[in-house]
Amino acid sequence: MPAQLIDGVALSQQIRADVATRAAALTAAGRTPGLAVVLVGDDPASQVYVRNKVKACADTGVRSVFEKYDADLSEAALLARIAALNDDPTVHGILVQMPLPKHIDPQRVIAAISPRKDVDGYSVLSAGELMTGLPGFRPCTPYGCMKLLESTGVSAKGKHAVVIGRSNTVGKPMALLLLAAGATVTVCHSGTPDLGVHTRQADIVVAAVGRRELLRADMVKPGAVVIDVGMNRNDAGKLCGDVDFAAVREVAGWITPVPGGVGPMTITMLLVNTLESAERSAA
Image 1: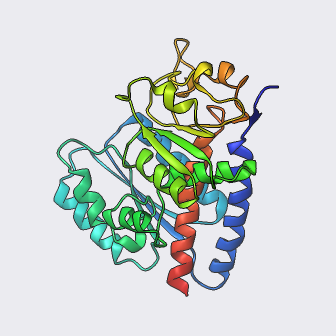
Image 2: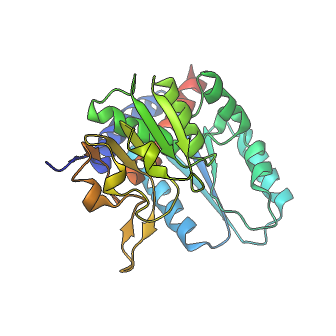
Image 3: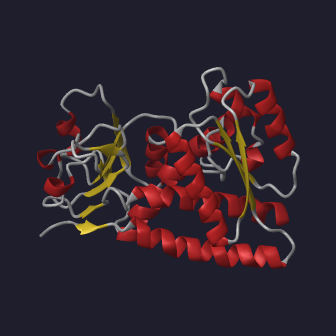
């Protein structure tokens, strides 16, 4: 029997409906949740991502402040603008779209964002809070992956999870979230020899390396939950993930599609983080 699809579009709509309800309550109390989105340069993909984020805010009652700057904006000017947004009480979350022009240090930019407004969950403090189990902002993509896993009804507790990928934005925080949920976690990556040795033992696989069809059917344990974070294009130019979807679906128990799986959840969890920031500031 083919694996059941984990519908990220449907789940994101459910969560966004809750965000809209809570945002309306805050607005009625005089504190509309606010997200500042900063784009530097003209990267086409970044423009699409930012447009989707701004639209998601409008759809859920979150106020967005979109600021676009030319690619030659100085690092000092960007840091000064972030400082002003840090001090703005109507802004509860700050997102600086990556990648930045080469003359701007992304780590300095991330460090400049107030920890109270780090709704991307990228700061050193946010990483430390995740590492030590303290409440804080979780990076949006792995946070969304955990919600997708929860939607299946499969508990991570006592399960063996394999995360393929070691990035600071997905792989590492994904592993920590699964550990916090009670899973035994193995982290693999592009340099892991014989990846299938590890994935065939996994009850849960999260593929997040950006390599097309890296995970094949013969590498998956029957009945496993497979979450595909990858965003690639096949020879026909169509979006595909890190998983050989058609083949793996015949083996896995649950699987996310690409598109329509993890993607919608990333922006949704950004909204959740912004809303929670606003709720904390109102408390």
